[in-house]
Length: 118
Image: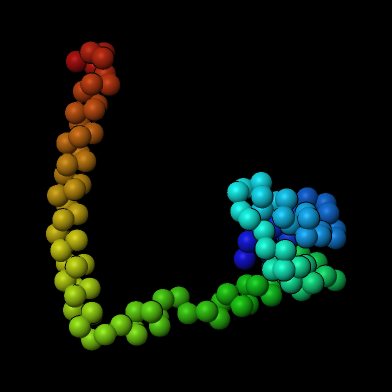
């Protein structure tokens, strides 16, 4: 995905035919090491296509992926009740956390007024 994004960024910046060096430079600018073989595969796959075609093809592929089905459904039978219990416990804890946040924000508000609103 990062190689495709770098390729599209290069095209959008005006480079109609980005090469591996261009993709590598873009990825390097955000601290990502570039695998030249993977970059070349993306470049070869994108040659002769405009950005709109690339995005349309990618959107079709992404829409066919399941959102979270298999990972959740493939868990063991014992994991489902444990997950439900964990959710219940988290739900019970959340109001307590919110109360603490409200108390803290009230205290911060008093300190932040510097006596102007007292």
